[in-house]
Image (tube, rainbow, N blue to C red; front, top):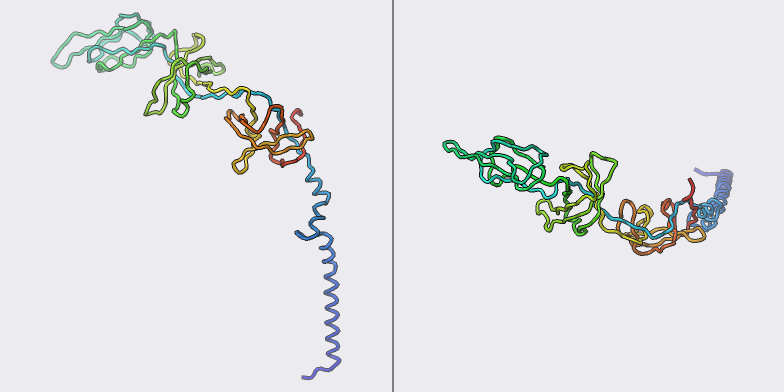
Length: 322
């Protein structure tokens, strides 16, 4: 098929028109991109200087601060204990048999030589005289675990006698904590019967051995004052004060941040900007941590509002605001 010269001219004209339309359509897009700046291109530097970006870098962060002063950080252990009579002695029969009579009750006061119980050593076909059991010391019956008719032998305790005017607390301390134990450590004792009161006590004896079954060591505490409300057999909760750190730098543990196993805090400068300071931490007690190095007395650190901070950030101290 033969194409005429007029047809070829028309096709060329249409192509030129279409090309012109495409070029015109593309020109505004290139201009817009050149002014705004594409990411990573020359325009990126100019975009960083926009008012919004400048305001973000100069934002003022509201925080709470603390001026570092010498403090005392007190370590302690908590445990449970049982109150018992001091100088408690178990009473054993001299011969085995059945308990036929008990002459005392729990809480009875006895004197040395008083009759406590009688043991019948008789067996079927044989009869023996009843064997008496006497109190070896004067005091109060603090335990009477067996009843009439119970069979006992010479290693069975049928009663306990103690001096309830001098009470002590028996407690067990886990093996991991025994390194700090010693006599005269102070303690606060609370009792279930008196929930809003604490009673002062101190350690009077520390066991020389660790129980290989429970992995604990026994300690005994005495009350600082006699109190008629405290009775043998009561359950107690003990707060035993151990190591005291005096003249220490102490800050809230929440003020410390960690990155790559390095602890740091934000220190406030005179121009209300903050800088990062690496610190070495000591013991942590009830949310308060000792700072061993990295800070000095008199410096001011941020203790609340650290999440949005960075090195050199501007801050507003709202510690005194309600």
